[in-house]
Image 1 (cartoon, rainbow, N blue to C red):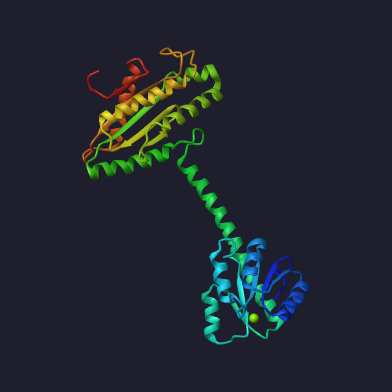
Image 2: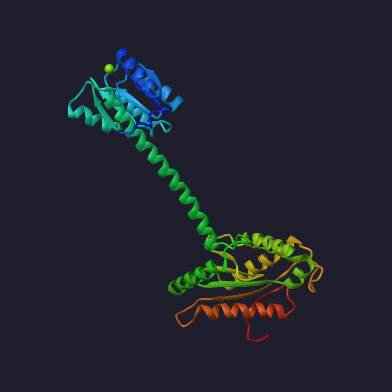
Length: 322
Ligand SMILES: [Mg+2]
């Protein structure tokens, strides 16, 4: 077996027998390990917590607390529970060995031991620990990468609120739920007034900043976890409000328009105000299988168009009679 993990590792030996300690100390020290020795369980636990050894060689028969109890306590302590414990004992009955494993030991060596065997077993467990650590790190990296990927899938890169793709998916899902449960669902579509003129006046960087600020305040208006605010298109935003009737939808719409006005973003080229405003269209329905979601969106879009036609900076619910 290639011996390499022992070098630069820290081994704690807990044994009440001075000769055992001295022999193991010399041998493992020669192999390149830092060796800590303790003659009883309690001081062994104390130094394990403080020094965080890579592995512990633990005698079973000791005064005060025995090796089993020492191991049990090490496994209860959050900072030492992951350190592998190898029992080393003259007790060689199967029941003794099994008790060692029950207490959380990873191995059991019977005394008198061969030093080469002790070293070989230490190597095995250090390599397992190392692999576990690497696996854990790899899993953490994967988890972070997955979260990043998930965000890229559902979030709009510029505004960091939901993107169109997530909006479409969520609306289809909530629409089906509304049909099934015969609940009302509301959709708000809104558009920044005179945004082309805004971009022409303040540049694309200014336009992007404006979109980001608006997205952020809009995203904070609906309070329930089921509500979704998304960037629908260039300067258009969509809000999905499940289980919401027309009065609720109008109230949220007015708040959305208000928080954007409250940003007080200067817009010299707007014909409706001196600051940035929104036009907003609402559609609200208790859908049946006779309805379809495309039409539902189209009607919200018509309501938005009406809000624009009626002078902008306002909320409209679609009506055939204008
Ligand atoms: Mg002993």
